[in-house]
Amino acid sequence: MDRIREAITRARDTKEDVVAPRQHPVARPVLNTASTVTSQSESSFNPVSCNFADFGKHRIIANEQDPVLNAYRVLRTRVLQKMESEGWKTIAVVSPGAGAGKTVTAINLAIAIGSKKGSRVTLVDLDFYRPSVARYLGLKEIPSVLDFFEGKRSLEEVTVRPDLSNVLLIANERVTRRGAEYLTSDLADHLIEKTTSDYGSRVVVFDMSPLLGCDDSIAFLPKVDCALFVTSSGETRVQEFKEAQRILRGANTIGTVLNKAPSSMTPNQYY
Image (cartoon, rainbow, N blue to C red):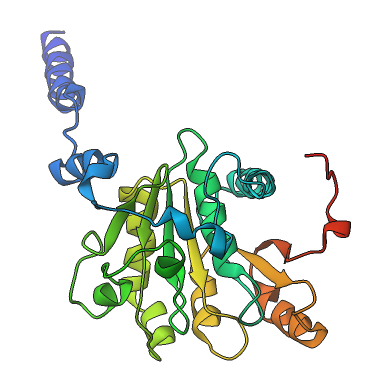
C-alpha cells in the first residue's frame, strides 16, 4: 500500500514539473514588437509636399468639393467591399495601353481610400516605362523605387509621406527595361510583405505598366491579390481590350473602369 502511495506521489510531482512551465507567459520577440510600433507611425517616413495647384490639370482629386470625388468614393467602396470579403490587400491598376487614365485612377483611388477614417493606403509606382505618379502629384527629386530594387536604398528610405490624408507613397521618376526582372525578384516579395504588414496598409495600390507592349505587369500580376482594369472611352480599341482581357484571364479582376466616358453615359447627374 505504501509503495502505491509513493508511486502516485512521484507521478503527481512529475506532472507538476511538466505543466508548471506552461503557466508562464510566452515572451514576444522584441524585433516583431518594435516593428509593429514603427509601422503604426507615419512619422517614420520623410514628409513631402504636393503641388495642389496642378491637381486639376492632371484630373487629381484636389479637395472635398472636387466634382470627381464622389465617383471615386463609389469606386473605393466597391473595391474595399470586394477586397475585404476576399481577404485581399494588394491591387494592381492596369490598362491595355498608354493614355487610358490608369495612373489617374490609381492616384485618385488611393486618395479616396486614405480619406476614409482608419484606412491607410500605400501607393506604389511600378510603371517603369512612363512613371507619372510623382509628376502628377507635383513632387520632384524624391527617392525612387528603383533605388530599392538596385540595392542602393532600403524600402523605408524610398517611402515618403505626402501631405495627403493617410497615404504613403513609393514613387519613381526613372525608366528601366529590367522591370520584369525586378518584379519577379525576392525584393518584390519583400516590398509586398513590408507594405501590407509593417506599414499597416489596409490596401496597397500598384500603378503598373500597360499590359500590351511589355511583360512587366504580366510578370507581377501573380504576386498581387487582384487587378483593376482601366479602359478609355473612344481610345481603347476593341482588339486591345480583348487581348488585355485574355492576359487578365488568370488574375482576380475586381472590375473594369470606363474612363473618360461621355456625360450621357454617366447616371445620377444630380449628384
